[in-house]
Image (tube, rainbow, N blue to C red; front, top):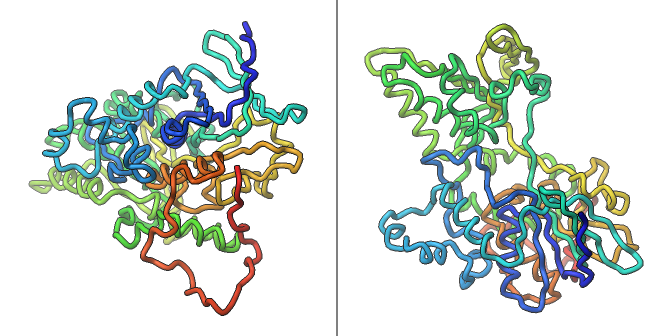
Amino acid sequence: MTAPAENTPYDLVGVGIGPFNLSLAALADGVPELRTLFLDARPRFSWHPGLLMEGTVLQVPFLADLVTMADPTSPWSYLNYLRAHGRMFPFFFSERFHIPRREYDHYCRWAAERLPSCRFDAEVTSVEWDGADGVFRVEHRSAAGHRSSVAARRIVLGVGTEPVLPEALRPLLTGEHRGRVLHSADYRAHRARLAAADDVTVVGAGQSGAEVVLDLLRRQSGDGTGGPYVRWLARTPAFAPMEYSKIGLEHFTPDYIRYFRGLPREVRERLVREQWQLYKGVSEQTLAEIHDELYERTIGGTAPRAALHPGVEITGAEAEPGGFLLRCHHAQQGSRFTVRTSAVVAATGYAAARPAFLEPLAGLVDWDDRGRYRVDGDYRVALAPAVTGALYVQNAELHTHGVGAPDLTLGAWRAATILNAVAGRPVCPVPERAAWTTFGAPADPGEQEGTPEGAEEPPSGGG
């Protein structure tokens, strides 16, 4: 069944309701002249459900909620959520700066269920440009098969990122190995089965990998005889803490984004690889808790039923009776070895991918030579000149805007930047300067430098 199309165009239609588009929906809720709609295929909001274990916390302070870093007066703040749930005094006495992930998920769901612009059970199946009417046509359907269409002057993609698996493990992702070879995004669903395995190998040195390792260690019995043997492999040269110094965190400011965008492309590509500790490291607390668990298990001289191996890449994998054989390469030594294990959890991160529903529009997008969006300072994607509407992206611009792209710290600021571009005025003012650090050489007012070859052009205006 197809419902009649909603012919009055929306000023903005968001596809996907994760924290970033939810932030935009919350900030836009205070702009009455804008007509907005946000669509998501899921029946309700859910944020990384496979990793919502007890005791896990956000790696950013609670002020990096949906709105506070752009508009602390908004009714959609985390503090107002606490007030609505009668939790202000318990939160105050807990002296938490980093809140439980489970509560962040509940907070976002609280906002999503109350924001009138958010519509769930609405899977977007296509987005195309209607040049005759000067609008995008957005087709969507419910789980029951009901189809609808809406028109929009602007689209913002907030579909998130997809799990990435090492090439060597992909052949093992078959039905017969389900629950024994998986991405950490699905860990919670298979947690009990993994805890009962003889030997579990966790791949990846980021926060997710560390949390899975810690959870599995805690599933071992106190005397170390029960629970799985836990092995932790990672390509990084160390299991290193995330950069969390006050000055180091200034990489997550608008100042650094502006600096990063002005660099030649090859420099940007290199920096993203080199800055892995800024966004792929592990919290010091989690590393300390892993160390404490291992310490407890070695009291009296007992050998731990665990092994930690940094600097290791998996080059091959195959199934064998009772488990899997992993072929590994140690980068610094140049040596090769094999590992036999009962199960593998790949905590190997996420990456932006081109959504299938965008294919009708793909020929009008000015992709770079690696098939990625070209994104300006307002997070607007470069389109063919014939398209008078605007397409924006959230968390698909790591290559153009740097390490802050996936970080919640900049979520409200980026949403405000997009909102201001859409409204054509500063409805939610953003700071001109936010860092003490001057990234790059000091400016010489007597000289005017041109744009370096390969650098992004200055941010465009208008929405």
